[in-house]
Length: 88
Length: 542
Image (tube, rainbow over all chains, first blue to last red; front, side, top):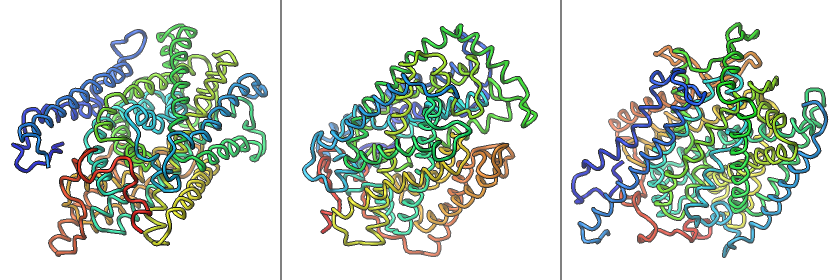
């Protein structure tokens, strides 16, 4: 995940980057743990839990990816300005 | 289905078909390129697409006959097990976010047009590059075949050819015509044709989904009734297997299969040459990241469409071939003219990705086989010509898959392609992040994965077929049933890692790496990154 030119730009692992990683890993944990959602109840508007829960995760993972994107942009900007914008 | 030709639906279908054909030819003039005979121009649309066009392009090949026909058909046939496509598409976005921007950067810095280009540049190995190219071409064929099955299902339901009793030529003639049209406009205008047509296609698809998802449940008495009748249908014993037909919720035994299918498919998706083509067409690496935040719109559509499988059951659609379930549902529920619109959406929705896929496979052949091994001094005009011919041949190869393999479980076409393409993951994604792997170890791992995957898939029988009857099998050492592609991938990685240690200890030559760490983070506007001009077509090397 650490995609910045790493040399001399501060630590590779920062709290922000940990949050970014968590945002990107969360969908894998949620979706691959099938046992956590393989059930029919509660039913919402007639749709069993199994189905609406996964559809809900489409939205959740979108939000998480969006957060990761925003954080990443900020992270990159902060790094280039701390070096006075002299990127290369 | 056998009540003759549905004239109104057919007329509407043909209208839209003609519309996109005309658009395809006009596309050649759209944002006209300086040099249309270069491969970069024909195959990558000049690499100048922004967020929205890229989004349409990516969506165009991610959501296809797979979405509209194969997934709902799997749900119709077996219930919950087919819904793995939803977690599959959810997992795709974090993956895109993580590695595709790096691929974009290094490709635009060094002028790579294909994954093979990158692998050769990174590992200095022509053998590995050839392996990646061959795998890409092979794996694309069954995926295109799936699109053909989708079109065939639509034509069958409309009463054009098809059916059980006609001879094979009458049955397949409409299919051959459809692909003749596709081949013709792909041939003349390259990637610009599918990009423009994708707008028509997605508009149609959104319209049809919106109507289907609101109108059909209301007509069927709401989701309560739909799931109740589905539950009843799945409870009945299947005479062929002696087990219940399916389940609304996967049982303990099916959970490994469900998870491995989702993960394996997600990892495989962006190994396909056509996905890479679409990605490299975007204007900057930021476009790719922005895209991951809007692509999930397509996932929601996929989930909704999957539920149509249950609606087909509730509506009393009874078909031998599950692929016909959704087209038949549309014909039963919609007025004829709107059924025609829906069929056009499915038909064009299969044609666009088929075009993109065959172009991508053709690029691979030309650059990494023809130019590297057959005719190194080919002129740009020759390259473009070879690409165009190969894109036709790939379509013919796909036709062969359709005509020879069992079409009733079309989702298996895509899963079979996945088994193969996944074996290029260690070289490509591994290579994007580290140069630690040894090139010969990667090649050996690839070979072991390909052999294991193919042999295992060959050995899976189904009630209708002795070989290639499914894509899941017992995982050695774990004992659960899992996706063969993922098992093969794990074996591949193990072999690669072990051999890398061995080869490094033996001081085997590493090969030349022409990339540098900062190449993987370069963006449009950085020195040496060319976004608009073709950086490394044949023209620039001569």
